[in-house]
Amino acid sequence: MSDETKIECPQFRLFPNGTSFMMWVDSNCDRCLKGYNETKHSKGRSNCDIENAIALSAATDGSLLHDGYTPMNKADAIAKRLNWDGKTYLEHDCPEFVPG
Image 1 (tube, one colour):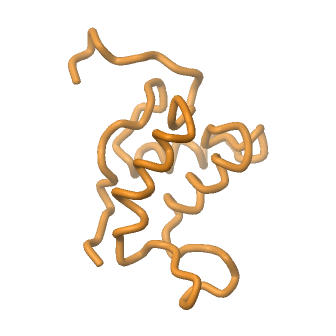
Image 2 (tube, helix red, strand yellow):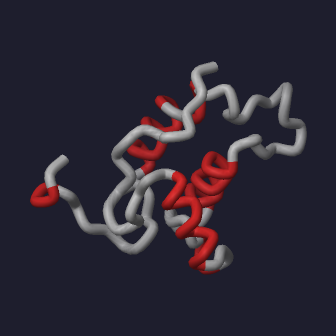
């Protein structure tokens, strides 16, 4: 996507809507070896910090800041792992994806 067509969004807001969230998780986390699996993760958390941060964002304000409960430096660290600037919606695949 070129710079002219990027959609600006509130800082660290991952997706414009729930459908985009579901599509990203479905094509990344749900197919990843590190992704959440009920039989392997009885405490309800994945082995992947990125998946956990994105899941929490879906349950809060939609951003990596999680309604202000997550410090800016932690949100920035997850964004860097995603190779994402945090200023546009997340539109690329997860760089830490492990085929499972």
